[in-house]
Figure 1 (tube, rainbow, N blue to C red):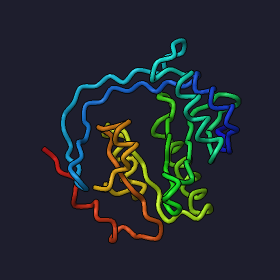
Figure 2 (cartoon, rainbow, N blue to C red):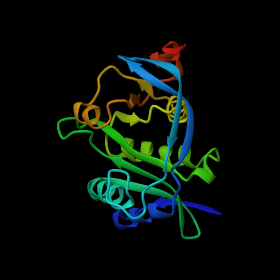
Figure 3 (tube, one colour):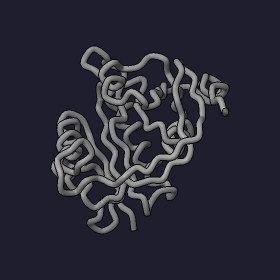
Figure 4 (cartoon, rainbow, N blue to C red):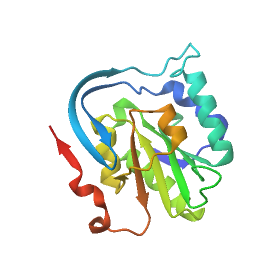
Length: 195
């Protein structure tokens, strides 16, 4: 049985148990507020369990812990195994009091497609709203699965990129979910361009 709950920052080291690997055949590129689907061949590896490089367990756990200490983290657990993790930053930047950030969302490869990511994202969205945010920003992977997931939650591509995230993740797809908008008000519906 999967249990969803808030995570203490120090629990984020448990990502060691998760497999983030993925074979990607389609991705997106962003042009302002429009996104374009393209064919790709990417093999995304799992976290490096022993090293200290950019995608190592040690580096990611430390980065995510620093965010969670100032905001919130949520997890999906089966017994003691961490199946998915979500980290919310209550303020994208100090000067943006009404814009939160969905900073991290990862689900173990063997458990994708079961609604775990959606439930974690909804927990983060509710926490963002409770903190006074009127919108939530995400710098999502350009892999098709991630882009379609966020679009399905109501996020829309935005031409207004956060400069820090853009420098850190230049190929990511930048999206915003504005609270209180229905599907008809979301401008992203016509912006998916397929080659």
